[in-house]
Length: 193
Image (tube, rainbow, N blue to C red):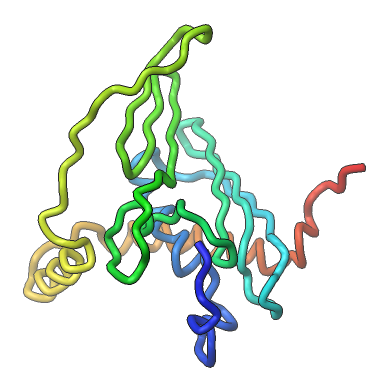
């Protein structure tokens, strides 16, 4: 989703605060948790609109160890109702749209998030049909729950995610940053006639 220009004024985000390390790193965590470990990543960089060397948009292809593949597009320069926090409404500083922003498909069905709409169907002549789910509701805002958990860990509780797991996600995000930083604008792509 589009971040306002003031978000980047006179701070670290104007140089190195790409949507990979600020936002997409969390989506990588989700994908690893839901689908499995990522074995290969490829990225294409979009054109800069604000100027400078900062990565602003792009597309990513992922291969998972279990054979699944995925694609991700990202941008912090385009207005969009499909951002994670816009869809979930978990951040009071971001307008809530309740629009899905992630779709996972498999051989027996598909699910969209955050609506948790499950789709089933095997006959290509008939539309897939939604199956009603009753997702759990948050007892408190995720930001409050994260802070409470952090305080509990300081007091000796076991963290929900350990450092080794976080390092894997960070390594994938850094690999994407490196690929994208080496491109000017789709410089590694095969040019089409």
